[in-house]
Structure formats: C-alpha cells, structure tokens
Length: 258
Image (tube, rainbow, N blue to C red; front, side, top):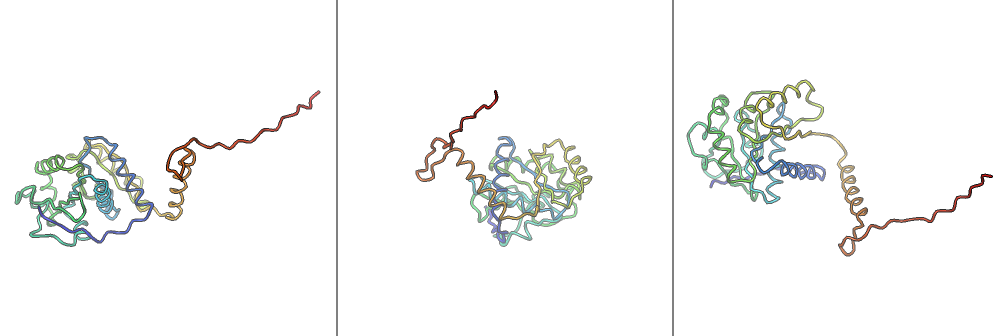
C-alpha cells in the first residue's frame, strides 16, 4: 500500500475539540448502514475540507478505520494544504475514474493510525464526465466493505453540479455552512438541490462561529461539575453515592386570624 504524510494541522481549541467529538458521536447514531458520508457546502472557503479532515482524525483516534476520499476534482484543497509527502508516483481519483489504475492503487496509508487517504491525483476540467461513470459507486462500495467510515470531501453544491452526482453514491450528507456568510435564499437553493438526489441530509454544521473560547471552556467544566454533583459523585473515592440534599427546618406558621 502507498504511503502519504499529513501535516500542517491547525491547533484546535477546547471548544472545537468538543464539537468534533460531538459530531463523531452523532454520526455513530446515524445507523450502521450509514458509512459513506459526503461533506459539502454552498460556497468555497466555508471550512468543508478542514472539517472533513478533522473528522477523519477524530474518528481514527476513537479506533475507527476511516478513509477520506477527495472528490473535489477541479480544485483540491487537501493535497495542497495538508499532504506534505508521498511515496512513489502520485495516483488518485482522476487516474482511477479515467481507467488508468485500479482502486487499490489510490488508497494511501497515512502517518495517522487507522486513517487512510484517497487523493485527487491531478486537477481536471472535465470532472462531470469522470464522476458520471459507474466507477465512482464501485469504489465507494468497495471502500465501505473495508473501512468503518468513508468520508467524501465534495465540491460546493452551490458552485458546480459535481456534489449532486457524488451524493447519489453516498449514504448521507453533512452540510457545512459558514456563519454570517451565506444568505437564506442561497442556503435554501443548495439544500433543495441536495434533496433531489434522495440522499438523506444527516445534519448541518455551522462553522466559523466567533465566540469567547474561554467562556466555552468554563461552560463545559461547569456543566460536567453540575452533572456529577447532582448525581452525588464521590470525587475522593471515585464511587457514586447518594445525592446529598441540604434541608432546613421550617418555622411554624402562626395563624393570627380570629
């Protein structure tokens, strides 16, 4: 198997790490048959590829075998931004869809345990023609048999029609929306386009939300502390105990009425 090195990862703060863990948990509750998941957005630069890559890292860290398939054949952001080294000739989706290699030739083991990558190979202008072949479905189905999750990084649905073609071969869609960037009309049009594929939309991720990360950290710690305190958790012995309820003796009420 070929080998690729992924690097230059952005450092995630506490709130972002918790959000990634929540997203991965929600995906696991989507059902056993939901394995091929497509990530898309309305426009470029909404953080779709960043989210997909970090979802792969988080799931792999949880012990899941995950492969990320880069299907943005016209403008791949994953290769240019995160792939720092590959062994041998670079082969990818465009080579496979054009019939120039086999499926096993384009799956790269990465330096992240349990994480694998299928790159684009080379950018093309005729992506629609390549994605229209039955080879895409065959590849995704084959990967779904060997991996727990197949995460597909697709182009923005509001820009080109490629995402709609890819969605037909997937089990579910995760829609990434950048906060304060996309209009309501644009969002509705993109969602309607995806619904035509009859592939269920698993959920929407609101990205690039600005808030005080220290406040979020305090919120999470306060929530966890309140939960365990109400449950009566004994922090000294590490064992649950009965909840302690403080009570006060009520004073008698004197009725002065005649």
